[in-house]
Image 1: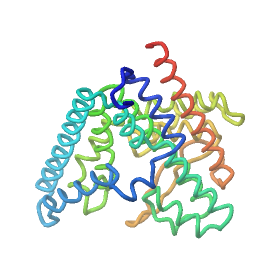
Image 2 (image 1 turned 90 degrees about the vertical axis):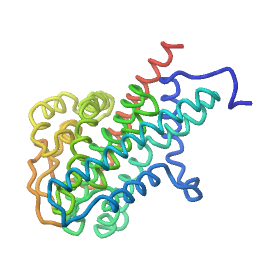
Image 3 (image 1 turned 180 degrees about the vertical axis):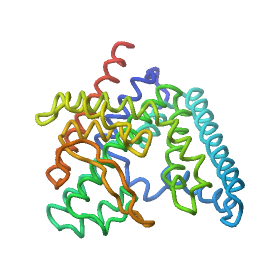
Length: 327
């Protein structure tokens, strides 16, 4: 049977197959209409723990400690699940199961699709539809966005999630295998659910946000290498301008990590990203990243998608090269 044959790929070989599978078929949405996606299960567990631990009437210190306890529980659970499944796969030589898990926890195809949907909405259905589409991938108030704001929001999300949703899972999987991949996805999910700067989550989600900063620190900086290399193989990419923008603007971003891939993409495509952003709690001032055009449109989103695809291809080619050398 194929599940128990003599061929067992190493981690690099399996990762390349997972990257290729994700690029070709995406996150298998049809399958997860029948069974819950692992991230959905994780989200429900986080919600359950939040309800058990968070009380708004408690002191800031108490809320911080409760948030830290939730982070510890979820982190230990994700690492333990990763080690248990890894041992089970090794014992039964079920490497296809590991391939499936890695592929569905990468976000290349799904991220590309969500951002492309914003471009399609702008082109075919106008600003209202584009605002609705971009609301699926950003946390800011979409009703305050003009065409340029919608396009910038989509491109900023594409850049940041290239680091968080593609490079970070690759990095942690290569470093620690399935435990590292599960831990990375758990930390990122906790940050997306709890790491807000609102009154409700400021203290309770602070530990989740700080852990996410630490876990994503190296991937954010590694991601710019792939974006710069991707700019080298795109017709409109400007790799040297990307490097200059990274040096001058990456550290200006309010996030310790997001500024790196955003600066790389802004410089490579001669855009200006960032600026004032509208959230439910009001306007949050943000420094502009890059010195190019800020009045972006659907065509600019497609240029960013092309760069994203090129950077992803470079990532896959490097993984493949290492996998071949290890044969």
